[in-house]
Length: 196
Image (cartoon, rainbow, N blue to C red; front, side, top):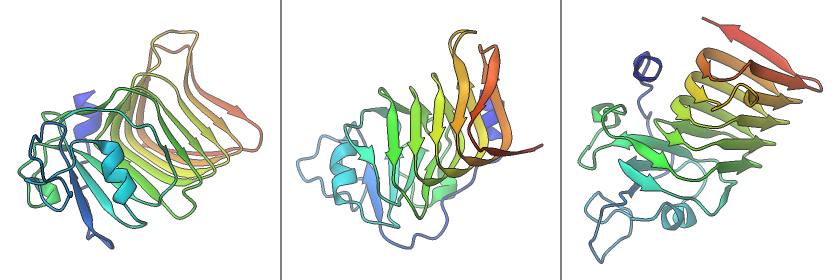
């Protein structure tokens, strides 16, 4: 998995909105997300304050999300919690882990997911980019357009789908599917572009 994640790191680019800091180990009473010292300890709290074009910088640790992600934001994991620049993170040492399935729906402009370890993920009616990310269940995509790069998924069983797509257009690069007898399932009008 580390080889897949490290093949291209994709640093956060210039933020068009604001950067919101998240660190599950932050015990400070003041939590407004404007710095690591005052980072939100909850992903949900950070998401509530986020607006389109904001970036969420998430430190290593375990997180859950009770929201369906609808905002056009960029979510970056792999931070240790001291970085001042995006290129300083080391995603294979600072693991940002989501303990539940992440659901994305209706992000019509663009949502980016980068440097995360997910239980599973479902994407519906969205434009998206996933890179330098791993999942331990199926990636399910419906009526969406997306770019998938440096993605690792362990389906857990040969009877499980690794990547399931319906009526979507996907550009797939450097993606590895493990423990699945059928990696890509396409139903409806799909277009796949596989690059190496």
